[in-house]
Amino acid sequence: MTGKLTEFMWPALVANKILNKRVGSSNFIADYPSNTEPLLAHVHSSLRPRTILNDHKDTQKYKIFVSTWNVGGVAPDEGVNMEDLLETCNKSCDIYVLGFQEIVPLKASNVLGYENSKICTKWNSMIREALNKNTHDRDLKDEKKKNCCKKEENDIPGPQDFQCIISKQMVGIMISVWAKRHLLPFIQHLSVSCVGCGIMGCLGNKGSVSVRFVLHETSFCFVCGHLASGGREGDERHRNSDVSEIFSRTSFPKGPLLDLPRKILDHNHIILLGDLNYRISLPEETTRLLVENEDWDSLLEHDQLMIEMMSGNMLKGWHEGTIKFAPTYKYCPNSDLYYGCCYHCKKTAKKRAPAWCDRIIWLGKGLKQIEYGRSESKLSDHRPVRALFMAEVRVSAALKSFESLFLSERFEQIKTHFDEVSHTDDDFVSKKQASFRL
Image 1 (cartoon, helix red, strand yellow):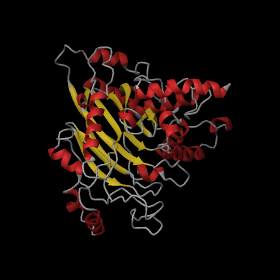
Image 2 (image 1 turned 180 degrees about the horizontal axis):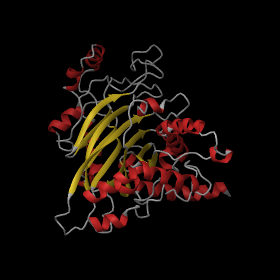
Image 3 (image 1 turned 30 degrees about the vertical axis):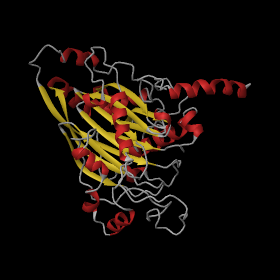
Image 4 (image 1 turned 90 degrees about the vertical axis):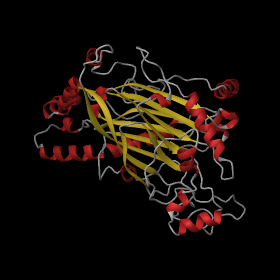
């Protein structure tokens, strides 16, 4: 019976994917219901009248961490050091945005079949643990000092500093956004939009998953992309075409007042991250020699993405931090050697010249990149890339005082007590799943 049901449903499933049937802008996973109004919705509505021009505005800066990693269809294991990728030991940011490509192998059953959410859940669990580890360690130290605590109180996990505000997967592309707990009341209008640019120009083996939200009165859009591959001359045109498709086909709801940005380029702060697959337009031998000599400047003069941002049509005017790290692709498995340089590479295999395929670029005033680098995990043939941004956000003067209240020690004591009384399991896989958008 199960076989017949699967056989009956398979054509409809494939047809929906080919026809790019929308699954809904609110079809994502989060730690709290996104369809409910934010905690301060009534404050927002009363302090943001569209017709009053004298409402005083302040600017507040927030630190945003962004990373991208093509994991090559390899499932995460215990050897993956998420703390190193997120740099949680060295710094703490307000918002974390993690993009992944090929979290599942890009075989037909994954591209045409049902979404395999187990790997997505695993990555999110590892991110949660890494971001909240410092909180957990601090709670353990505090508990040791409280000798009079009851046993059952010790078994209650403490509140977590970071919560997932949105996570979405399309085949192998995944994006996961996390924010500090005190920011949650000021984040609203969360939405996702998926665009497939792969097989037949519409399937999700290539394409993008975009998320948008409004923090206070500033709109953000993060686009996690996996563009067309290929190192032959002219292949960059396919990548430019993918960018064009993503910009034109991605759309978000206008909101109840019809005033929210609908297209990617309408947002205040825009960050494009992912395996953009742009290569270096030089002979392979020349590329490898310049890489060996660490002559990044000479290589970047022929970098296809750099050329597109300076004089192209789709990404002209976009910005990228200075690249001072080695190309992130293509490495031999579990090695620091580039593909084609290691003894166990097959002679008949396709050659892959080193390239900066994995990139993070941005657009928008008030967005400044302060760090740009790569991590050294050897899980796949790509190295992760990460960036740190400082983002200016418009804040109503009255709402700014509310946020100060949320950060105050007195409010934290009240909130901690409330969390201990009404604590629920924060895992992505829960029995009730009442607070998850599936």
